[in-house]
Structures are given as C-alpha cells and as structure tokens.
Image 1 (cartoon, rainbow, N blue to C red):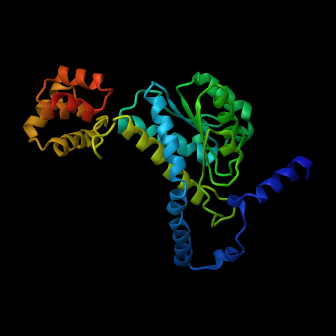
Image 2: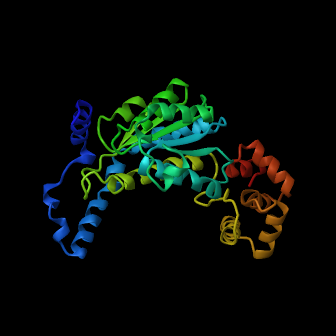
Image 3: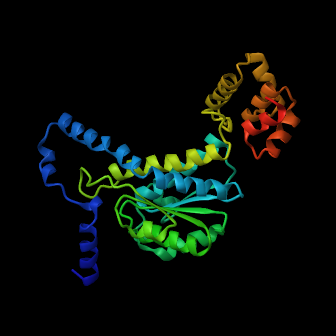
Length: 309
C-alpha cells in the first residue's frame, strides 16, 4: 500500500459516513422482514437530522433566491450518487416551475455518461470541476451547490472553491461534521445521519438526507421567486395530458371557476396557468395579465394586489 493510499484510508476511516457498525455485522443472517425493519428504523432519523440544519438551509435559500431574482442560475455539482441527485432535482424544475432552459443545472463528474455508469477518476479531479464550471460561464449572480456525502470529494470541493473565487454564491452540502466542503462554501450544510446500514453505502441515509435538502433548496427558492400561488404550482408547464389536466385543476382550485371559464382563460393566455388565474380573478384579458405579471416580477399575488384583487 502506498503512502497516498494509506492516508486516504485513514481519512475515510475517520468519517462518520464510513464508520463500521459491529452491531450489524450479522445482518445477512437475519430474516428479510427484520432487515427491512432495521433499514426503516435507520431512515426514520434522517428527517430529524435535516431539522437540525434548518437555519443553515434557510439562509442558503434566501441567498439563492436573491441571486436568481437578478437572473442568476442554480448549479448543482457532485459525483456519483450526490451528482445524480443534483441532476434529478435540476431536471424536475422546468416541468414543475417552468424555469427557463439552463436556469437550474445539474453538473455531474464525468458528464451525462456518469448518470448511469461509473466514470473512473472523475470524482477525484478538482480541475475537471473547474473546467466544467468555466464552460457554464459562472458569474456573480449564480449559485453553485457542491454535494458530497463525505464532504471531501475533490470534484465537489473544487467546484465550490472555484465558484467562490469567481464571485458566485456557494453552498456545501455534506453528511459529515467539519467537512472540507462546508468550510469551502459560504453556506455550509452538514446533515450528520450517522453510519450507514451497509458500511460506506452513502446512497442510503446520506442520499436520502441530500434529497430532502435539495427538495428544500429548489422548492422554497421557487416559492420565494413567485413560482407558486399559495401551495399551487401556477408555473407548471403543461407538456403532456397529465399536466394539462393538472393545469385545469390548479386554475379551478385557485379561482373556483367553472370548466367553461377555465378553458376560456387558458385559451386566452396560451395555456399559461398563472396568467389564466389572473384573468379570472382580476377580470382582465390575456395581454393585460401578461403585462401585470411582468411588472410584478412574476409574482401572482403582487399582480393581483395592483388590480385590487
């Protein structure tokens, strides 16, 4: 074993996410139901671990929303499971919140191929992260979120360090205390969920914790940006029959209007749910609704207030 390999092994052994659980050493001999109960019990503590970091999560969201309101982008970066979770969250934003192309980006070490297969060595390259970010042209209005269960992944840490040097807002999401990733970022979020059921398998509790935090980062940011009206997704993009049906239901829930009025409003606004709601509640035509929303920065509640609605 080389000195470098020995140092890495020592580093990993010190991480909570890599810790060995002697009490589970014979898990493979247990009945399936008992293993399922053990896993379920482990997962039950994840939300509580996230709850301990709500102040840090909220502060990060306020920073992200402020920059995105100025036209900035939200960029997730990570390797392996962490990177895939970032790509997943980013890919859900266009249909859910009608974000513009490239407004929320998932950047995974090794590129698209790494979504479905391992790309050897990609996670170990901070230089690769810098190259990937430079290709995006990261600037001061953007936010870069590094995601890494261990908090030491060179790709994630390198991305955050480079983004911060470029003036972007940076967030470091990890599952170990005192991580290099949190230290490198302006907003460090360390959700410590403890050792995994399978030693070092951070797609389990750590992955679940990361998914929960990413849900918050994107969803609450979009709420702050006016992408919702109450708890209704009024910016949903109706790209298929299910979403078109959901659009009609959202307009109905927001306005209480009947089917004919809803169809007329959606037709008048080119299928834009938020605009259709404004047409019905404020009694304006489609072009006026579009203008009012533009003047209010896309916030439906603010647009309604200008009409006395």
